[in-house]
Image 1: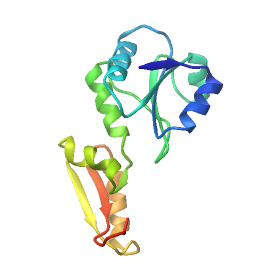
Image 2: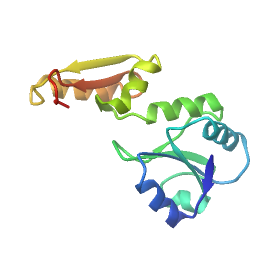
Image 3: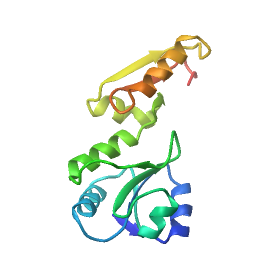
Image 4: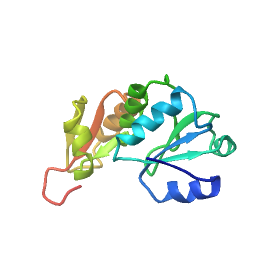
Length: 156
């Protein structure tokens, strides 16, 4: 469920969690309704509601959604339509790093959601192909998941 917070408290809240979805603006409209539908059915994010004034402080528009996360670029501002399905899809794509270090935290997005994925198994993190793999993850961000994993016990 969504929690209404002031701008100062929002900054404290989003700094302490890996994934936060924030709705900036009025408690009405199709986008707000979709935000609330997604909030009721998600366990991966913390959901907040903040004022339009707070939106400006975070580079967001009035009556908009942004994902704040502790990896890659943040915040990520939603630009899609107002449907619940589109908001959910945006969240799913925003919940994983551009280049994923394989770990238990990412098993569900990699294997459980039917997303296309490319996995690079390597113990040589300095090899030249890592740069190419990283660039491809940037170029195809949101279309294909790019995952790196070691091949030996204890390599992450």
